[in-house]
Every structure is written in C-alpha cells, then in structure tokens.
Length: 151
Ligand code: YYY
Ligand code: MG
Image (cartoon, rainbow, N blue to C red; front, side, top):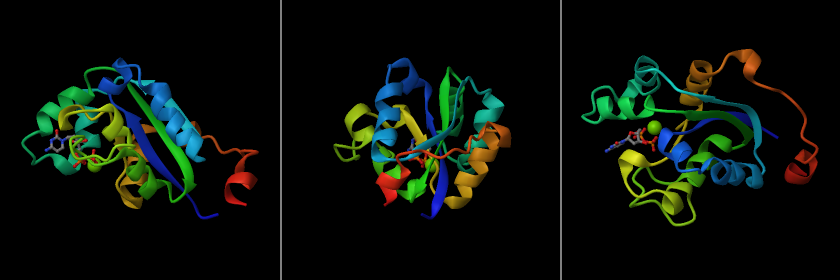
C-alpha cells in the first residue's frame, strides 16, 4: 500500500462540545491508523504559524484567536489516500455547504466554528505534521487489521 500521513486537528469547539470520540471513530472505523495524538492549547503565535497561508484574509486574526482559545486535539493519521479522503470525511469548509454524512455536515453549522482541521495536500501535510509534532512523537507500528483493510 502507498502509505501517506495527514495532520488532523479537532479545534476548541469540537473538544468543548464533546465530539472527540465521534470524530476519532470516523477515521478509525474507515481503516486509517492513528500514529500520533495529543491535547494542546496552542499559543496565538503558534496558531498564526499553522494558518500562515491565510494571513491576508479578513478572518485571520479571529481564526487564530479562536484556535488558541482552548484545547486542540492534534493527530496524525496514516493510510492509503488519507490526505485527500480525510478532507472528504471532513466535508466542505463552510458547514452550511458540507454534505450530510461528513463530519462538518453532520456536526457543525457555521464556518467560524467548523470543529476540525485537515491538511489540504501532501506539502501542507508534511509541514503541519512537522509543526505540531516532534519526529519521536510519531509512532510507527503494525496494525493487525492492515491485511484485512488492504488485502
Ligand atoms: O481547510 P479548511 O479548514 O476547510 O478551510 P481554509 O480555507 O483553509 O480556512 C481555514 C479556516 O478558516 C476554516 O476552517 C474556517 C476559517 N474560515 C473562516 O472563518 N471564514 C472563511 N470565509 C473561510 C475560512
Ligand atoms: Mg485549509
């Protein structure tokens, strides 16, 4: 299998609303493998680094205030096609346009409180994993389910 890794984070709204297990289980049941997880309160400066691509957007300051306002569940998930399909599980950025069945479609209402982040491509996945995790925090292991998931 052509394994890749993506950075997924449950934002402070998702954590406060008790949606951690609901969201983790969607990635887990799909067949992806959890390789890193931690609960952190990012600083404003750290949030600005994470969202640096958006610094010219009008919502940037509020977005970074929000991300740094409480605990964030930072994760790395591994699997074939997990970057692109993870975004599909998450749904469109604006929950009013996300399909039912997606995480944002089922669990969020407005764009400013869309509960989850996921890397949007291989380059950002690599950068975001490196920003949020030290290499030793990424756990490589064999899941006994792999032969049933990938054949
Ligand atoms: O990758 P994704 O989270 O789906 O959207 P981005 O375009 O990268 O924007 C990041 C973040 O910014 C989004 O999850 C909510 C917030 N945001 C906003 O508050 N208002 C917008 N019009 C667009 C994005
Ligand atoms: Mg994005």
